[in-house]
Amino acid sequence: MSRIAPTSTTAQAAATPGLSMAGLTVLLAGQLLPQIDFTIVNVALDAIARSLNADATGLELIIAAYGVAFAVCLAMGGRLGDKLGRRRVFEWGVVLFFVSSLLCGLAQAVWQLLAARALQGVAAALIVPQILATIHVTLQGHAHSRALGYYGAIGGLSFIVGQVLGGFLISADVAGLGWRSVFLINLPLCLGVLACSRRWVPETRREGCAAIDWPGTLLLATLIVCLLLALTLGPGLRWSWPCLALLAAVLPLLAALWRVEQEQARRGGHPLLPPELLRLPSVGFGLLVAVLFFSGWSGFMFAVALTLQSGAGLSPFESGNAFIALGASYFVSSLLSARVSARLGQVRTLIVGCLIQMSGLLALMLTFELVWPQPGVFNLMPATCLIGFGQAFIVGSFFRIGLSDVPQQQAGAGAAMLSTVQQAAFGLGAALIGAVFAQVLHGGGDYRQAVLAALGSELVLMLMLVSSALVFRGRRSRRCLA
Image 1 (cartoon, helix red, strand yellow):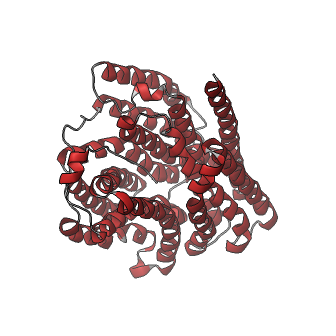
Image 2: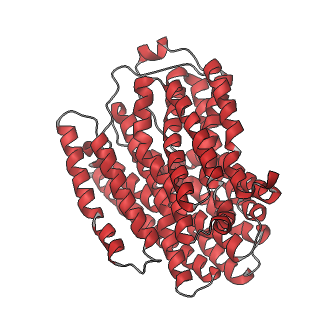
Image 3: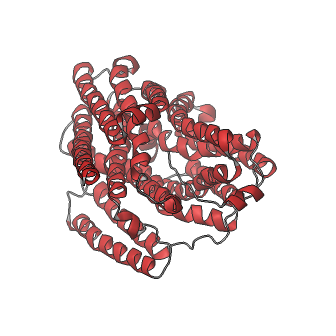
């Protein structure tokens, strides 16, 4: 669900070859690779834990390593494509995704899988920015609008495909591969995309593209890794001094990042997090939405998938099917999101989405209380439908609000910044909610208590988001009256 929207001049667009339907299909197939890998791993968690003797901390890191690497390298991937050619960098990303998926499938230890997952995240960061950038510079009018519609639909489709396909592959145990098949299935897909890319995807690049903000990228990576390690290792190490030291390092690193970005802006550079955009109220609120909502979403997927398999004993296939209703309602709601936003306004739509999702979370908590230890596809369906329906309203409002005050010439930088924080939140969510989940388990609780604590934590994040939205809406109204 990332959006990178590099700008292009009219002259460039006129000189750029068009994108055929075959080329668009290749790009969308490439988009499926990184998006499916966000969800497909969830249904493999229990199998990975038993195969590699991984505890909850290791599983959190396996989820988080992908998202964190994706987030940190996202802006770099976009700028490399602008400079070296988008099709070329897209193909590099697919090749790296092939290699990293093979390494994931061959991993014999948790650390090996962690390293391969991080490499997958880097590959995803090379692939994703090139897709929207190519669509933007090669298509116009109705064809452009239709392509963006397909791009958005792939996000909802990949959620369902990842859950169901992953569960099927593990349950089928093709060639005795077990959980490894959820990574190895990427290999033929990568080869198919590479075989078709050179023929149907036109090469494009941007004249006078921005340099990569290496200091900002390294500081952001260090900050996220410190926060990630503290959250994941804290429950297991009983929050000993190394964990507290990592947490304490976050604020100084954040201050250093802010100084570096200000210095880059003063020198006329292109900072990863442009200070002039961060000062805009809509951008600041958009970043807050990203941190609160996407971390909660990622943590929700981790905690519920692990509970259904390790706690309730569902097979990977049954666990994957339990999320079909959520994905389907998300898809339907995403089709309505723009219309509802036009009628209610962006902030009101966000608040409505939060309230619907919170109702779903409460219903899911009640469901676990009533049906445990036998949760299943059908008794989880009403609650997960509500959750998915609300989520699509929130995601649709996220970019609309975050970019609402951004000048047109800086839309690409604004979208890249929002996407970077979005992906970082996805990576950290499993660690954040997972820390609560693991703390309850380590404290002698069972999986039912752990998942209720995790869902309660997400509910708190959503309450914070609603409160912040009301404050933001009030301030915006006062500015309009003034």
